[in-house]
Structure formats: C-alpha cells, structure tokens
Image: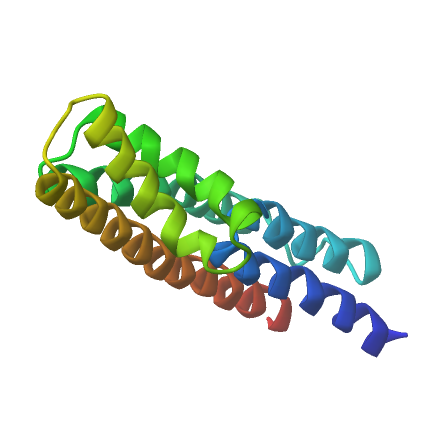
Length: 161
C-alpha cells in the first residue's frame, strides 16, 4: 500500500507543476494536498508547526509571484493597468480558445488588445507591451517552479528526518 500512497502523493505534486503552465489548475492547492495525503496515509508527526509555517510563507510568495512578475513585465515595457488586466484575462481565457498554445498567446493578445482599445496606443507600442506580458508570464512560471521545487525539498527533508 505504501507504493500506492506515494503514487497518489506524487500525482498531487505533478498536477501542481502542470498548474504552472496551465493556470486554471491551482498549483498550491495540489502541493498542500500532497502534504495532507502524506499525513493521512503515513503520519502528520514529521510535519511540525515549523514545517507548516515555512510552507505558509512560500504559499504567500507563490500567490504574489504571478502578480508581481506580470506587473514588472508589463510596466517595464511601458504598459498600463489595463494591459495587466488584459494579460490576466488572456491567461485565463486563452487556453480555452487555443488549447495549450493559448497559455502563451492569451496573455500576449490580452495585453496588446487592452493597450490598443483602452489606451489607444499604436500597434508597435502595444506589441512591445504584449511581449513584456509574455516575459512576465514566463519569468513567473520559472520563479513559481523554483518555489514549488523548494517546497517539495523541504517536505522531503521533514518526512525523511
């Protein structure tokens, strides 16, 4: 049974990493699910208060990483708040319109359209802002991936003693 339990825990963690590039999946929920499954299947004893406090800190950082990376990417390339909203909407809607590629194309198109329609910027400037949004998304995925990997390393450190 232990093997089956670890497979289920591993599946929760895998889904969390899939959520990095498919934002409709709440990555942090699946990481915590993996922790909880370990506690239910084996024991909560190794998951001390210190463990949960560390994980809560990283969870807060994960929530902020998306917003901050997108904000920096858009602002650095001259974008507005409308471009940030357009990028976010594109990130959520894109995968449904264009499966898989929509994750990359959606934020780009969303921010470009926001700049064109809301602020009536020229196409060249709007595309530049779209590129910034794309860069922000990619850097956010990278940062969140590192944070999630660190959360798992800490988890393994605590459960292996």
